[in-house]
Length: 74
Image (cartoon, rainbow, N blue to C red; front, side, top):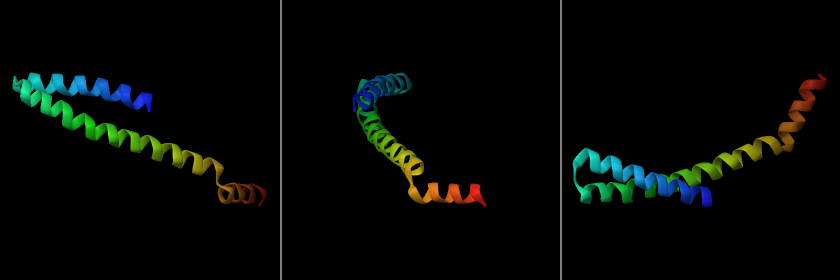
């Protein structure tokens, strides 16, 4: 979770900077900086969990291991 929070802080600064530079408005830059990174932070956290889950499932599936062994011995 620390990695996610660190990413959120960096993302907030980048989003604010880009929003402010594109519009010249502190209000719009601030709104973009609050909404966009919040959504992306949640999406990133979910992505990491799914990615890790899929990686573990592929490595540890007994059925997958059995299929690999049967292919190698045939």
